[in-house]
Length: 249
View 1 (cartoon, rainbow, N blue to C red):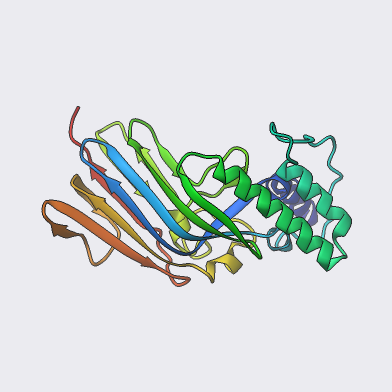
View 2: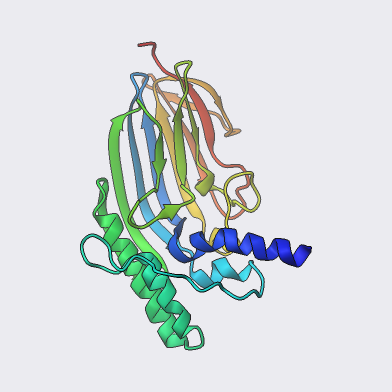
């Protein structure tokens, strides 16, 4: 029964392992500015690490991989899809050089996909699954906001999510800015390895009422604005979170 359940879990996770891009923070500086009128600006500058397929599959057990059928041949612009590149890795499983080349090809495709999205001012693939990212975006919170999420790169496990509530409040949580294996945030096979590279500073800046926040040092008020700063590392267990009350419309 246990073996059967393990095989079932593997089958359910396989599409994400093969086709999805699991990104995690490295060394970074990030800010989220939210005004009482719902205007916001989010920035992320620093390293982003893509979990390698070997890291993700290592925790799934020694089970045979089902043969995939009929993957999409190319993206709209003619470049190979991430799923196609991932499937090609199967032929190079016993060849370290070919495996590295396939991983680099996948990560270069991720960099290309991200660079096409609004907000990315710079995306550079540095090698060994590591990217240099400069991202900034502004808008109005009339809907939720999640970063990162990219359809082409099929990125999952967001660093931060902002949720607009029905009672004029906004709830923010940053599961990517904590060791997911020690917190109640989202996790995936292999994320324990990437968590060892977590090193950053995340700052929430607002002139709205702070209903709650989980930084024990609390907010600092300057010229009518409040800032809460979280310093995150592999020892960070609680994902930064806060609830803000917006001005009534």
